[in-house]
Image (cartoon, rainbow, N blue to C red; front, top):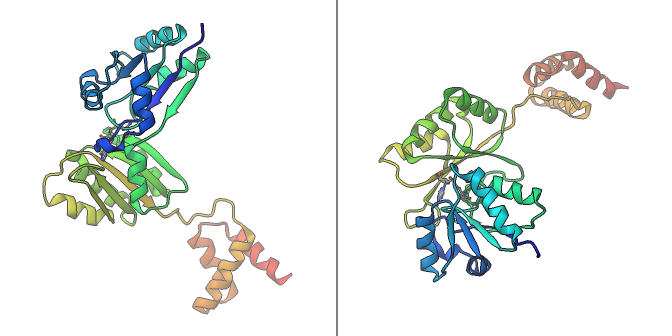
Length: 278
Ligand code: SAM
């Protein structure tokens, strides 16, 4: 008997037009649909006229349900995994079933589509070549501080936040990385969609004006710290030259300035500047 396939199917994060034709076909053809909240997903399936055998698959029954799904897949059934909205496994249940399928040699197939985090990133106007996604902003103080420290080190960071905690979290951001560029994406693809770019201070002002409603993603970009971890002699030489040219400093003072400003050992800057004389 051939093995079934486990399909990981993305569903809309608000606008039902965002479901893909392929997702609809896979859901229609699946022998079993594992859904985070069966009542919620039943409404979605009903909207598209899909009749399905639904089983629940959520944070509290993941381990047991994964075993049950693997048994079904082993017997040749195809299973589609969905969550309430967006892409399963992304800050949502699912990865245990996927891993169990890999372990059992069962093919796992992505049916990609909406995902709140990537949708927010795509409209943020912030650098996207590399980013860190943190799930929900931590509620525990120590973890929140660790995340704010990570943001202070620079780069693009993405997290989910509940509407009633948004302003407090933006205030914490303002204190930790006031110079950051941010974007709050709220209610994406829905009627009251709002994409608000700005500094943490501007966003605090904007979202303090009225109670915040709906679902939110926060994107933060902080410029990389100006520390030079492994000093590149060419860069150091260029910095010294620029300081001499721009501020009329002597070479000695320019070297001191660059060492202090970029937290580089002074002898490394001396060595780089000396290379130029050689
Ligand atoms: N796996 C999902 C995905 O790929 O989109 C994310 C699940 S996570 C449990 C749910 C969080 O995503 C919400 O609390 C909210 O922060 C964010 N979110 C979901 N839909 C959204 C929307 N339409 N606009 C903005 N944020 C949204």
